[in-house]
Length: 251
Image (cartoon, rainbow, N blue to C red; front, side, top):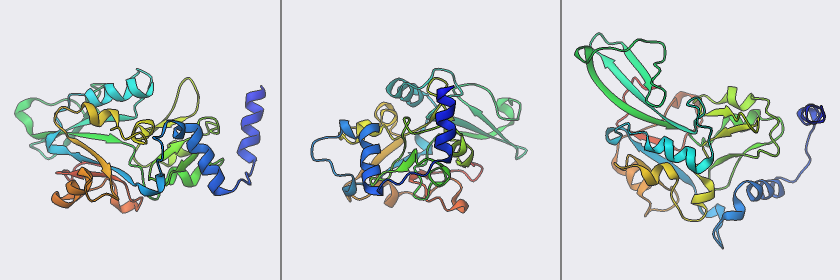
């Protein structure tokens, strides 16, 4: 009962905390304590590249993410997932999750009917203009100076507004904490100079992580040498997950 009263109170409360102090406290609570000595978020801007042609749908990225971030084992709780797109000869499209094996609205098709197929890894797009941040009534979802959108689980009231606002389906309500959860680019790792777990285990280097403010970054080279697309560009969320060789059927 006390928890419910607290949640109701927080939904109505207005917090008068200076923005700089709030951000420093939130990052410190969430991940900043593990940062490398001398790390300055203002000097970085992180993003990820996905080379669709290289993804083989092995699912190692999903397993690594779950282990690294204590994501529930159930398939419908994911910080990252991989979809298999099957383009049929009649022009129709079948989409299925390689983790669950459950197709989304269509039946499986025989190999004889397939024109082409490919895998598309998906995750939080770490938007420059994140709708989830805009709708959070208590400031639990926030963007860091280095371009990562995080969730303060101590502040989150589980209202699900951010989950509904995300156009990429990249958020879920954690079944144990009852707070919003999502990909953080393994923020606790990258502030120490490490790669996100999904990038580290990818056997084909289909995922490229880097600092957009560094000309020596693999991600900067990836963007310069590939034809780049983002998901749902018409929404103007300015995603920082960039796709190469993305088929027009992908949404």
